[in-house]
Image (tube, rainbow, N blue to C red):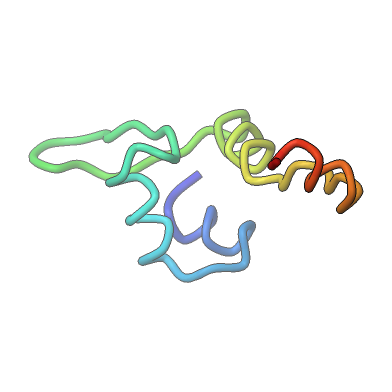
Length: 68
């Protein structure tokens, strides 16, 4: 899929997707001459979304016990 399609799926702007690609956080390939056109695979987009999931919250008392 192209950047515009990925942005629609993530419900963000195209510039966010470009930034994620530039940071190396969203795997992609460039197709064509020069800088090329960015293409993002369905599997890479799904993997990226999995890495964005927050970790389950622990009980505050457990967190405090580990912190001290």
